[in-house]
Length: 493
Ligand SMILES: Nc1ncnc2c1ncn2[C@@H]1O[C@H](COP(=O)(O)OP(=O)(O)OP(=O)(O)O)[C@@H](O)[C@H]1O
Ligand SMILES: [Mg+2]
Image 1 (cartoon, rainbow, N blue to C red):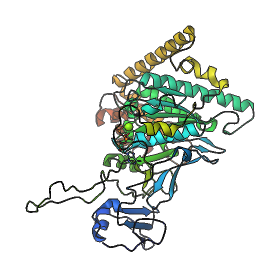
Image 2: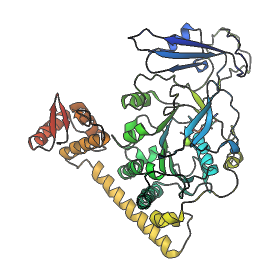
Image 3: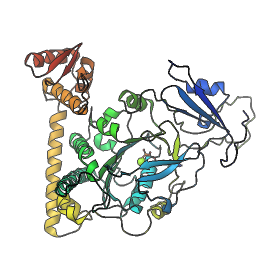
Image 4: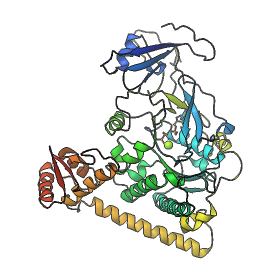
């Protein structure tokens, strides 16, 4: 279709429709029907933003609007005094921003989800470079053995590449948070002030799914530490974020572990799988009623080729990739498609990518405040692999003990040996914890199906409905749980 030329400024041709449904109705739409109706062959040329209720803004472009963005320049990657960082553009050309720090409140929690090749590591690399340029202390776990974001080596305060290293790092972060907490309490301070005196500490995990998926060796411990940091870190300036490929939130650390954290944190959704979308909706991580336009794997209209058509030799249909396209679900435009600035070379380079190294800029990254070194412990102090011999030995010993504890815990929880009653209690405890602070009636209660699902998602042996029902009635008779009627159970008051 021919679109009228946009007045000034924006380069592509564009048309905008404002849509509203009558009062009493809720706006829903089917993207493909809408595209067909508007004669649009390439859904990458459409953006549909909704207010979650009755109104939508449909923008149609003559060419995919985010096909070409200028690469980010290092000097742009400094967060402003309100903690905002521009990481890309929305489809309409407006700056897309994420927040690394909220003055008066503290550090952020966040997650970056996307299928393989969606652009998680590039987006992460952009954020890592911004953290370096903003004087933020970054602790990074690159669980692909250091191959996901290899350029980050030496550009962050602490980098680990194994799950054992991650355990040590998370424990150190929890201890730093505790230490800061008591220090701030002694100062009579109730909120975190950046660089007064301590820097923001940002813990980031790429390929977090490797540590949190079923069968991961320290899944429970790592999930618990992440959750702990999510709970205690914010107000003392210790942030935690993960980048993960997952098809379901439950895959990440079991039933409720990360859900609470994600709900309050900032979720960024790159190209996803349909099951991920369902779980984000059913988990309430997307505001109710939110529809977002799926990100196709490639832009450009799909091609039908007749056997009778004469195909010119070499005639290829230009279809762009969509890496880096995403939705910032925690922003004030959760349904507006955006794209991260391109980072690094767009073709494979051998070894480290010089463009990415440039992004980090010269000089040392910021380091953890000396006051917290003791709390961070020997693993932190010997993170470069050197240091006094006894400190290196202490670090190894401490990490070894932690690893053994985590492995033993994991074995106990996944051997399926935990009695069903214990697993039911755990599920109800987790639900109560997730509903902490919610005073509404029945908050934290689970119905039978939810209990059955939670028990079967805890990594243990699969159990049938009959055994769960049986155990529920035993627990109920023993007053270990309370029945709320209509099949719902909770912990006794
Ligand atoms: N912002 C962007 N703009 C343009 N292209 C991008 C962008 N981000 C990523 N890409 C393209 O997508 C490819 C994959 O990106 P990246 O390695 O970050 O994905 P990933 O989600 O980390 O994948 P994996 O699951 O394999 O780790 C890049 O090599 C690049 O070609
Ligand atoms: Mg990656």
